[in-house]
Every structure is written in C-alpha cells, then in structure tokens.
Image (cartoon, rainbow, N blue to C red):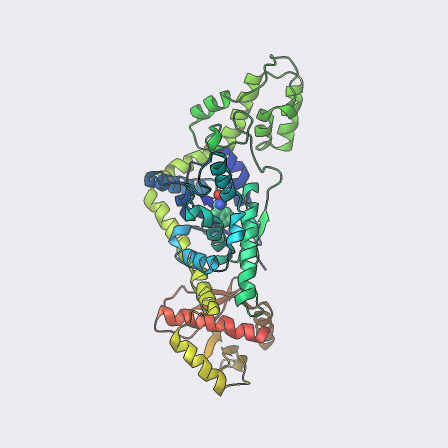
Length: 452
Ligand code: TRP
C-alpha cells in the first residue's frame, strides 16, 4: 500500500531559505519516492487566523504556490491544492469540533502561549484570542484526517498538533466507526538532518527575527544578504572553528559531503570569512538559480497557477467528497430516502450479503459483477482472460477494503475503480452526482461488510 504523505504551508509570508531546506526540499524529494502518494496544500484558512490583511494573504498564496512548483514539485504526480478550495475541510472541521475535548485544546502550545502572555501583562487570559486561534488544531486535524494521511512532515513546533489530530481521529473512530477505522491515525515526520536552519544572526531562521535569507531573491540581493551573516572576528589566515559557525551550518544544508569536507578543512586552515561567504553564495546560486527563473516565470502568469490549483482541488475532492459522505453517514446525517430504504432492505434481505459473481462472455473472456446485499449491481469489471485473476482481485478488494479502493469520477455519470494504476471495473450510470456519490458510499460499505 502507498504511504500517504500530507503537509500544509500557512500562506502568510514569502518563503525563505529555512522553509526551503526544512520543508519544501525534503517534501519534494519525498514526493518522488515510488510508493509515495503526496498531498501538499496551501493552508490559507490557517493563514486567516494569523493575518487580517487580504492583500498579504493573496500575495503569499501566489508566491508559495509558485515557489513549490518552481522548486520542482510535479503537480501531476502529487495532489497540490488550496485548503480553501476544498469545502469538505471546514465541514469536517465541524464534525471534529463536536468530538474534540475543550481541555485538549486548552493545552495547545500556541493558545497557551497567548494566555501566558496575557496573564503576565495582567490582562484577561483570553484577550485577543480568536476562536480561530483556539480551534487551530481542529482545522489542522481536518486537513490531515480528510485524506487519511499516514505521515505528516512538519517542524517540531507542529508535532503537538499532529498528536491532537491522532487523538481527535481516534475518538471519532471510537464513537462512530463501529469497530472500523474511519480515519487513519497520522504520525508526524521530522526531518532530522535539516530540521532548522540558522538565520543571519545564528538564531533559527525566521521571519519574526528578521534574519532570513530570501529564497528567490536576485543574485545581487542574495549576495548582499549573505554578506550580512554574522561571523566571529577572526582574521584571514587564522583558523576558524566550523562547528561554532552558523555560516558553516548553512553551507552544510546545501553541500555534498565532499564539498563540505573541503569547506571544513579550508576554514580550519584559515579561509577568510569574505571568501567563505563567496563560496556559500556560489553554492546557493548553483542550487537555486534555475528555480529562481522558473519562479519569476510562474509569478508572471497567475492564471496558469490558478488552473493548476483548480485541477489539484478537483483531484483532492475526488477523495474528499465521497469520504465526507461516508462520515456524514457515520454520524447520522443521512438521506431520509436512503435511510428508509436501508431499513426496508435490511428486513427483507436479512441474511443476504454482498457478493462477487463472475461470468464468461461470448468472446471467451471473463468478467465479474459486484452486488450489494440487496442485489443492487455496483460494479462491472473489465474483461479478464484468466478467471483466476478475478478471484485474486476480489480477494484483494475484500482484504484491503477501503484502502485498496481508488475510485475515480472522471465522467459525470459513473465512477471507475482502479487497482495498482489499472482500471478494474466501472459502475452503472447514475443520473446525478449525488446518486453517484451515494453509490460509491454503498460500494465501500458493501466491501466493508465482506471484510468484517
Ligand atoms: N500549522 C502548520 C504550520 O504552521 C500548517 C498546516 C496546516 C499543516 N494544516 C496542516 C501542516 C496539516 C501539516 C498538516 O506549519
């Protein structure tokens, strides 16, 4: 089974070198792994919590989208979208809000920090705290649980939020799963080697310390920023201690082992700081020069970026829409009509179960149909020359259930079922998207009853 990797980027600023080395680059590398199924999104609803300047929000969304694509993210390979284009996310947020303990959220670091600061200043503990800030971890849990992510690459400051997503997901599973794992419980993934980069002054590179190196600044600007990196006052020719130098740490984040070994021995041998800075500049310019050009080309065509993100949203919603349907069902927000039919069907067909039925066609090929317990046909497979392959497929569908199911709705009136990148079966035609989504839900449920 593929590993689903998901992470969000809050759209409040312009990406800097620390964001690149700590988050963007490792995420793009991870997305290229053969078994990776990656979801990267612009957390623009989260941005609204911290920022009430519409222009800044808008600008940052654009810059961050362009940054990820320029840095090499392949939007065809991954699912790349804006959080605010997925209405299922706020809807799920509400379902989760209803099970998240207030006490759990009281313990969130970001909220507690605000309260502590207020208390220190003799203010009301909740002064200036919005419900958005307080509920921040629930929105984040919805981001993660919506797509059943296994791994969530984040900075250390976000580990607690991923753990809260686990807690909330677990509670939801317990309350509504009927013994089944509705939500996959996520794990935080911390990139140990380059978790944080130092900024110009040696503290963590961060916009709040005003010590950042911009990612796609012009070569000239990059050079002048690097010139401002603080070093000790050792003169050219005096040995420098690489391990006490954050310039060295910055170099390390981008160098090959051979380049790094050379830089280390040159510093120990007395390389001048000015020369060391020139080498860091060259290293960064080599790594980022091409991406910088792509970045400016993308920024110049916002309409193209919009199209890429809309396509990403469509792709994401192919998962989110049916899954949210399942969750609504689980909590009891059910269509009156189908609920009534369900009880009638259960009474009439008690004892019957969902089933696969294979048959042979006139041309000698085999196909199978899959029926719900009430006899409704849900799937018709492609032709198989070997009937044994049908047995193997149906066993896998039963054993792996929802995880093996990749349902696509490329056509408006039917869905297709894909396994290992191959179209395995298709549904009958449905008159509306609602009926189609309801049928996808019944398919998942019917398979789940077989697994049980
Ligand atoms: N809160 C994260 C941050 O500030 C951004 C984020 C939002 C996120 N939703 C997420 C990260 C879901 C991972 C998964 O860095």
